[in-house]
Image 1: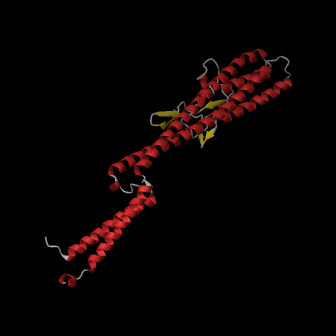
Image 2: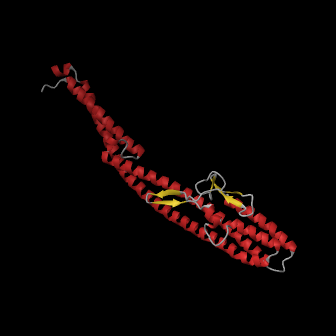
Image 3: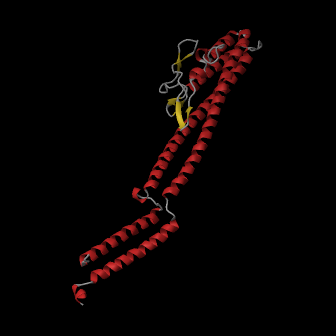
Length: 304
């Protein structure tokens, strides 16, 4: 085949352009620290990297879900602590009221305190987290406890009995709420043998006001039943928080392992990348030098 000057010049130019592209690729690997910057750099590696990034993104979302659930449960646990403390005070007042030596003035003060306690418990039952009522079941946009207009029960529960579940890992969901119906034993749903928590306190107040020590003594059993119900729920919530913490630790470990694998898949070996850059620089300089010599050849050189 006859080799023309144009063919030689075109080939030299192609070599220069190819060397320049490879030099640019080498420079990009050094400057970005990435071995893969486009799919053509490593097709199979790109596929693995995409899968790893997708999994890491899913884990990040699960961690956000778990953190939100944990925060809500911790707030719930704080409210439950307050309710337990309040009910323990109710029990103390009941014991004092059952004492036949308690004066009428003291009974009046105790009744006023029980009124305040019922208001406090109602406020705790209407606790919110991120603008949502935590004891309302799935009806979180409105307060679950509203005045009933009658002493039995003093408040009505207008929430529902739904448990809200959130996916916190690929393999599990977590219940993130406690219903006020169960918590306050509304309709004797949690403790069938005793009236709801607020009705119990209202009845206790009425009995203390009347000085009915025998009825007060009997009422202590209902106070204890409601108190034990709240303590049991608090223990369950604590167990849920511990479970979320275990899941979070597992997810964080998985995220770290996958991030390391992703780095091994798409990151460049810096030492190797620098050596390759120097090699590409030499090749490019040689290509430019060769092309320059070819371009200097004239027809007079051929005649000679």
